[in-house]
Image (cartoon, rainbow over all chains, first blue to last red; front, side):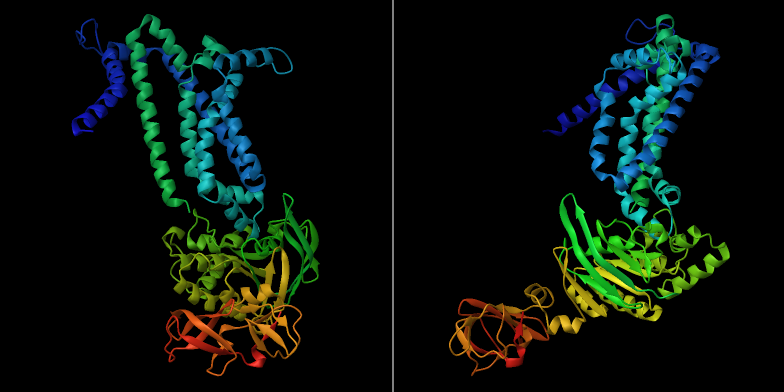
Length: 261
Length: 336
């Protein structure tokens, strides 16, 4: 392959990835855009968006949803993986298979099933944020699982826990003083992945709760019908947030490589 | 430090239908260092893990002194364990690692600091308190692991292949130091190793294990000079081992008639260093390979159907193809 061709490939990939974002950014500050380039530029759409209470409320709900999902994921994953790696290593394969299931189920099936299950007693949770948080936690689990499981695998948790136990630490102290600090970088990077997955969740949210408890992606879709420029501004904001979190997660991974062993 | 011995009674352990340990019984006297020696998969590590409380035996009992600890959880046994992989806590400093067991036992900060200092001095790492464990060499890490295990004054010390991950040179140094410390503290110690040199050089007694069972227990000298099974004879040191044929006048070994001091029940062997190059020896053979070892040379000699290993002095110049005659003193034959 010639050097030219290699560079052309890289350039094509770069354009494919970045052009839509650049276009969104341009659209969010365009007065009107019918030709190749916008006719003029303005910050009006951004100002409108930032003054809109509906935007801030939906952003708040999305933040609440995402943080709850991260907290729940970590709360379920860390002790479970600890117990599995320590006492039931044979179950690890089953667990991994189970965490892939949310990928297999289309969101519609999940939503319809959840709504019909939780529409009546004993747990009347349909159309409440609680059901949404629980459901989004489940579909975000695969992302967090990978990162946390890798952290457990890299640190030889079993031997570390045995060392702690031989020094008199019971399971709770072992978990709190040894295991958790050791896998923390992996847990945080898994948390960031779960956060991103929950932050951008649309399909399930729309079906489960829709505008009753409007999250940022749902609001964005609503907004796109009336104000495309404002919607583009949200896109840019979301990307910036995702990048920031992503770079942070990557830096945690790098630290983890040094501190583990 | 209270001195207790370890007593194992008829220990059994199976993993998914596979037998790991089968009927192991052993008594380790207070203050004694006993090695479990054997190839990988012989059950030595599983035995150590049952003593530590990491595995629950399927049958049999474990005693520390008079106390039955068979069902006692690991965290209540007061054992010190040193692992092959060091298993230092990566989030803690050297001092944090050594003081871990003391913190768990709720010692005061001041007492912990004093004890950590003592332990650092004991293992020769004074001044390393605040270093992160990642910055240490393998030998230093294992010293920290030893200090961490000893700090809470355990009743017994369990060493699981503690030197296997280290370079040969550091291994030899640490081996001597470990033994010196153990004698100084007088702590009952069980060492698991696959390295017969390590077991022989460090132990009061060695337990040779094979396929989940104990083959032989004895002092290093007993094991070397009086092995009771062919497995021990070949696993501990090297051995020329033969199955003798009965003849009217005596026995035939490697196609040559020899007189044996005692009638053998099974096989007979001779250590390479007890075989002599002697022009009047009864065994005639041909040199196949000469390996120079510095202090001596190892010579492989083809005698009839067998290949003999002979350790010979360096002064004798030998080449591949040279005819040689071998002599075995009568007391050098070992019956197994």
